[in-house]
Amino acid sequence: MRKETTISINEEDLKFIVQEEFEQIVDLAKHNSYCRNCFQKNKVEMINYSLALNDLNDVIFQGTCKTCGSNIARYVEIGEQPKFRMRTEIIKAKRINKN
Ligand SMILES: [Zn+2]
Image: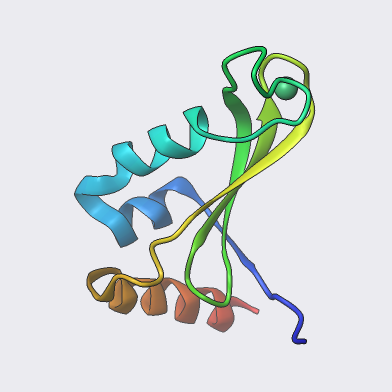
């Protein structure tokens, strides 16, 4: 089993990668996250989230449940899509050069 490595990105980076699908992806992550406290009780909304890319080039939203304050996360699988791959590599290369 290999350890998953992630790199932090910001909203501008995500916008660059997914372009016109940005709003849709953010909306999906914010409103379709799973919270174990609020499951089947309240509508879950993620607030104060940060963004990261994993090894598979999927986006990870990590934030807080607006209702109960739990830490919640949501993966959005964009790594499978060839149209995003090139721009994801550009973002990753930029991050690596900074270190
Ligand atoms: Zn909750």
